[in-house]
Amino acid sequence: MKTADTPPDDTGRVQDVTQCTRRVKELLEGGLAPCWISGEVSNLRVQASGHVYFSLKDAGAQLSCVLFRGDAARQSVALRDGLAVLVYGEVSVYEARGQYQLIVRAVIEHSMLYDGGKRL
Image (cartoon, rainbow, N blue to C red; front, side, top):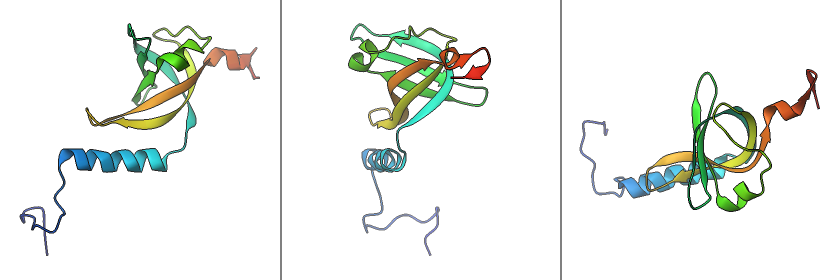
């Protein structure tokens, strides 16, 4: 029986970092449907390319987000740190850094969903 202390044999079970990251990417991108997520914008960075990078956070976690130039140009919400938003997008893995992120396709200011305490 193989354990973590037992060196691997040459049956192809050893993966390099790229192979492992690619498997993670396939699992995440294939297993999670696009969805709406609510949170607060932080660490907002607008690049010269037009891409917008930010974190979406709540009290328990944060999620790296990217809004690519074409999608960013279609938004009517002016993002700023501290803004409560709903974003729609899909999870992706940026293989070069082995990090997952949300590719944002749409942004709605969270307060716009409410009128006098009632959900619109």
